[in-house]
Image (cartoon, rainbow, N blue to C red; front, side, top):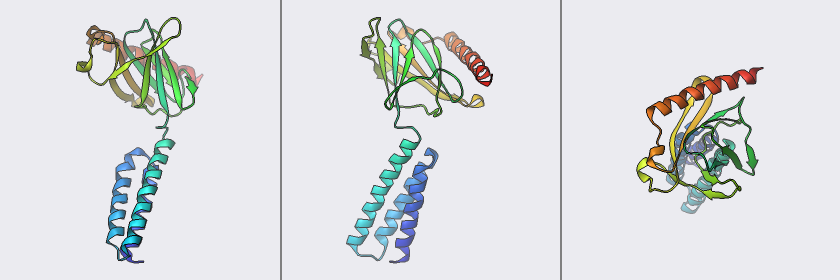
Length: 214
């Protein structure tokens, strides 16, 4: 085996390790993998041997990518159950040390939204999941899935969920995501309502952190 081939295998190993670690290193991991494949294909080995090793690197890369995805909790999802009486904006705060412990159903986390516009959810992994389902629940417990939209202009006069914001309170080690349950365009909150939710979120979070330290 020649030098390019050996360096290629080393790059593949580094790429695999980076893919398993933090998501900020994914790009570097994929870049190392690409370099590894190029070096293997440019090596002096026979074409059959080079193709076999290139395929092995691709398979290992995929496995490491999925493993890293799994270890960071990205395999878990959320279901939001909205009361039939709810409308407007809800803010979900994800905290490690205080808040409501949600129900679990397999990989799914169940979050109930009644008439409370600010919810603090306690979980070790504060990752904001991007794959979620939303349901409207009537008084008899019947569930109807709610259509999800990504911008206000997508609203078509049917009950919809608008993913409004994703962020964090870095000083409190808390992640945030906001949703708006829209029954009409009037459900888009005013600046005053947004300010009220901001103030309420911070006040509830401070109280929650204080309770957790007792």
